[in-house]
Every structure is written in structure tokens, then in C-alpha cells.
Length: 407
Image (tube, rainbow, N blue to C red):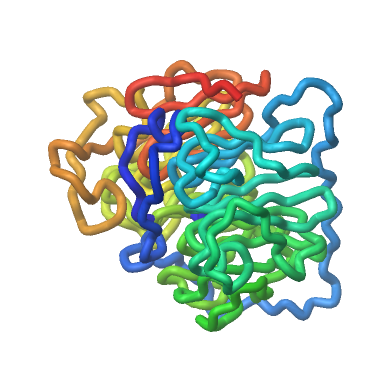
């Protein structure tokens, strides 16, 4: 989740039930006011007129005729969806804004639902909406639609899938706070949704409810929240939105293979598995006990990471088949008491909120106990997350325990 002000619930409650009626939608992008800007290079605007753009040939997972099992998961705010091997979806959690893809009037709290969509090869859960990329490379979304999250200016919240116009060549998909982005087969990036803070990357703050092309090329991956970052095929990282401006600018880091933005903190994985983070640090989100940093700093104590997920007051990474987290203590039941410290309440979006007695942080990477043989993770910004295991099952964790999620 692109890469917010979230409801602070326990992870199990969020994942196990629909939790009643509608929740108030966000009014500001996560970290838009207090996120530390990414360091930028001089004259760092990327042109998109390169005649030698690569064409991405990235095959999707084949449809499996056998029993349906989970192949990919994505978490929104208090809900989640999983892509199954038979190209269908399973979704669970809050459905107050139709984000599960079924009519809330027919949703029974605490149950997993199957939205009526097929041919799904990728799912991306935003704040209160969900998007899928299908085998024909088109994108469909449903749920909350005040800011063009569904690619239109209708403002109609619906569980009926809405096709994002003018996208017929999507090879990668991301959804976040108020919109989404795709990487196209020509390695350019198309984004839609709110553009108040330049989230669309087209050099303006002009609203574009339909997709508009970001001023970046040679893209291989995209991550979205209140701001947006793209990994380019040369290993550079380019970001925009939030406090980072309306045009893509280069972060002072090289050899990037993956990235994640969330809640004013951004992280990237470099070749070899090192994780670096920058931005807010009021809850130890940067992996150390110090001030915020506009310069990427390496998180120590991780064995080579293959995935990272930054969300608000905490960050988690997948390394060696295990899940490692740092930041606010309710994101990891394994934090030792000797590691926990009082949050500094610097006005950022990390631990901020509640009384000091409620908010602690652990500024070093700590393994989540009870999670092994993990192949993918995602997190929620109020704490906790879910892990996809090699056997196709999902286990979710909060501050107290790791719990299997039956799909």
C-alpha cells in the first residue's frame, strides 16, 4: 500500500472480520506533511522520449488446473486479497467500502469471500479499494472511488469491477492511498487517482482520473503510497509525490532491485540483499535509534533480504525464509523487552497517537517467531502483516501471535 492515517486495530481482528459498517476515508496522503523528502540528483528529471525503450517480456504465472492455492497476497487497510493458482481471488476483512469485491449487504463478518472475477494474474490492495491485472494485461478496480481510485471521476463506490481505461499492456501493478500505477510493456509507467501532491508523476498537480503517463522510463517495478517510486532497469530509484515534487527525481542509491514506500518511510533492497531506508524515524523505522534521515541508511542484522514492506510505523523484510521487522512494537511479537524504547512523539506518522505508555519501538531488525519457509510478505500500517508460505498457505501476525488464515 501506496506506499496514512489508519484505524489502529489488531491484525487478527482486521483480517478475521468485516468489522461492521463504513469507515471514514483518508483525508491526507500518508506522510504527505511530515515525510522526509528523498535525496535527489541534480537535473534529475527523466525524459520519456527514449526511442530505445526496452520491451518487457515477463511471463505471468500459468493457470494451474489443480486444487486452488495462494500464489500472491496483498493487504489494504484492514482487509486483504490473495490471488489463487486458478486465476481467482479470495478476500477477507473490512468490506465497508466494497473493497472485497462483493456487496457488503451479503457479506458475513469473519468469512472469506470469492469476488466474481477471473483470469487474475496479479492483485493490488489500496487503502479501501482493490485492483487486479488480468491475463489480457488490462486492469480492473473496485471499492472506494472519491479520488479517482477506480480510474474515473464518478465518485461512485462499488463492488462491481471497473476497467481502467487506456491500459491494455500492464506488466506490473501497484495500488496505494488514493490511486494506482502500472508498468507497461514498453517500460513506461501509467498512474491514475488523486494528484494533489503530484502523485501521478506527470509534472503537474492537475487531476487525471484516468491514467496519465509518468515522466519516467526504463521502469521495471513500481510502488505506491502517498508518494510513488519506480525501480529502473539500470538499478536506479526514482520517486515523486508527497514532499518529493511532481516530477520523478533520483534517490542517491544504486543497484536497487526492489523498493517499498509507506507512511513517510521508504526502503529499498540492493543487489546482494542489503536493505536501506530513509524518511521518518520516530518509531525506529530506519532500523536504528536516531533522527530522521533524507539519506538512505543500511539496516543491520539482516541476512540477505528478498522483499521489503514499509508501512507507517514499522517495516518488515523477508530474508532467509523468515520475516524480520523493526519499528513500532506491535508489529512483531518477538521483540525483546531489552529492545523496546519509548517513542519520541516527534509529530511524525510513526508511533504518533495514543499515550506514551501505549507506544514503544524497536530500532533493530528482529525475527518474527513461528514463521518459516516464507516466500512472500505484506504488511498493514497499524501493525502486523501476512506471510505466504511455500506450501501455499497464509499465516498472519500481530503483536501477540502468529495465526494461520484459512482460505
